[in-house]
Image 1 (cartoon, rainbow, N blue to C red):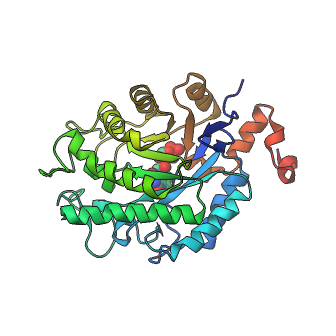
Image 2 (cartoon, rainbow, N blue to C red):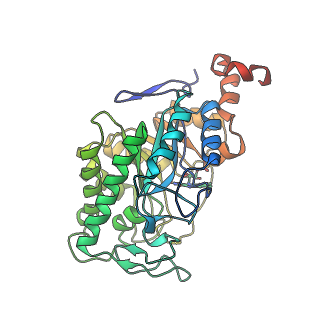
Amino acid sequence: MAKIFDSFKIKDLEFKNRVIMAPMCMYSSDITGEVKDFHIHHYVTRAIGGVGGIVIEATAVEERGVISQRDLGIWKDEHIDGLKKLVDSVKKNGTPIGIQIAHAGRKSEFTGEIVAPSAIPFDDKSKTPKELSVNEIKEVVEAFKNGARRAVKAGFDFIEIHGAHGYLINEFLSPLSNKRDDEYGGTLEKRAKFLDEVLKEIKEVIPENMPVVLRVSASDFTEGGNTPEDISKIINLVKNYGIDLINVSAGAVVPAAINLYPGYQVKFAEVVKKETGLPVMAGGLILDRNMVEEILGNERSEFVFLARPLLREPYLVLRWAKEVGREDLIPYQYKRGF
Ligand SMILES: Cc1cc2nc3c(=O)[nH]c(=O)nc-3n(C[C@H](O)[C@H](O)[C@H](O)COP(=O)(O)O)c2cc1C
């Protein structure tokens, strides 16, 4: 029995199936951070394409926290209308949609000053960030809180906190990028403090039944960096605020050689699931339906995320539905194509 097409409920939110569209920067806005027509077409197409849920691309909670100059933004109230239009368009198809709220920290391409836990550049080609003072940390926490408040206003079904890929939250979590000797750095507990505060504040402004997803880099792929066990300990420290799902990715906090092979991150998701007891989303180089069925069937994760396969083939999930005899899931307009 194909498990891909089993629904899954988190709080009151029902995901139609177990394939989630992973967040992907589309570099299609501009310095305003506003939603453009492209975003609406792009996400609605994948919604029609039958994914179980969508996490939209990294959306910056501060202007100096953009990954690129063409990211979406949620740093001011003026962003709400455009995001709401996007959310409404996707929801017309009945697909749950979440937003990945993000701050790029030292990896930001913002033209002005950039910030991080410590004044260490990502690599020798990168700008040196300014070390955040304790007061400034509180301001960034506030920016995450305001981002979450705006996400609720825009109508998102759930919020994903970007704690992965070497961006600001991940920079605090990893001992490789966080060399602070105050209450925000040093031990694992202290490195988790920034995430702890972000979560606590976000939970203040979102409805009780709104699911919260946390994306983590479960391995730094570098000696002395975080391991899946370390990340699980961090999640266990903060999960009481209410985290409903962990999106398990890996790497990118420092430039490290990564041995890539199909499903190379799934084993990290398994560790996080076992150590935290929380549902997880696994993915990264998932190449075909059999891999998805293997991961779900063996209960290695509750969800699988797909990124690049959905750029190549927006109707991939419909093809899989056809392959397992679930023609009923194909929109009537497209039935003759399958
Ligand atoms: C074009 C592109 C943009 C991405 N942007 C983001 C992003 O905004 N946030 C994020 O957490 N991951 C981002 N990723 C990583 C993906 O979510 C995913 O983890 C990665 O591509 C591995 O999955 P895949 O093998 O299915 O592509 C991006 C990946 C791609 C290809």
